[in-house]
Amino acid sequence: MHHHGPAEPAHHHHGSPTGDPQRIAAVWPWVRNQLAPTTGPVLEVGCGPIGGFVPALLAEGRDALGVDPVAPEGPAYRQVTVEDVTPDGSFGAVVACASLHHVRDLDALADRLAALLRPGGRVVVVEWAWERIDSATVQWCFARLPDGSEDSWLGRQRTAWQESGLPWDEYVRQWAVAEDLQPGAGVGRALASRFRTLVDEDVPYFHPYLTVDEDAERAAAAAGEIQLVGVRWVGVLDDGGL
Image 1 (cartoon, rainbow, N blue to C red):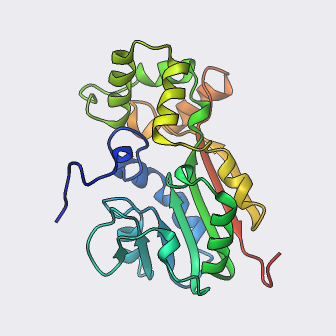
Image 2 (image 1 turned 90 degrees about the horizontal axis):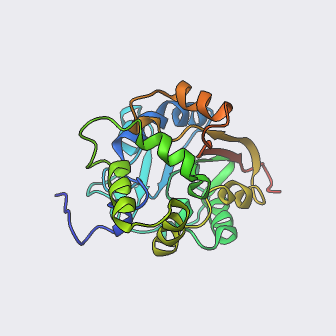
Image 3 (image 1 turned 45 degrees about the vertical axis):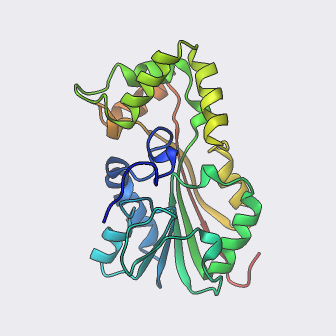
């Protein structure tokens, strides 16, 4: 059964698009490539109410476990946080999509993930640096929302901002405090203390919700019109630790 309403944390509704099918579909090909060299089970941290990448991983024949307090029912999921997973070094990879910017102690998380992984295991992170969403970026995005998207994550943000009557920068600051968001760009930096960085790149983020594609968003950023808000980071746990 899928329950909607007060049982789901607010950030699934109004804040970050964690359990978002558009986001998952858009980044899955990249995630799949990053996971391809790994063997062993994959742990998804913060899989959200629709299970994140776990259904796609299972369809590929991978052993996968999704953890989230709002994870779906079923044998491939547990309704817990990553702190409740036994750190026995059994996982070949950990993947997290837009779930780590809620973590306060990233150093403790890095140690936790290292204890979960076998040597040579990978951490694959898809994040967004919400702190980079300036007024020019968000206006560009709002101008490219498809018709009828009032109910999408970005459409709801536009409505909430307009209703607030605040300048964008102030709205974002208040929203980040209310949602307890940590800067997304800091996630990879913190994990890099424990893992050897393989990938660290800023990428387009908003296009799954817009009428333009990834190339158009990248071109706008290259022209200085908007910020690249997406962050992709991959690290490996070297044999014998660091």
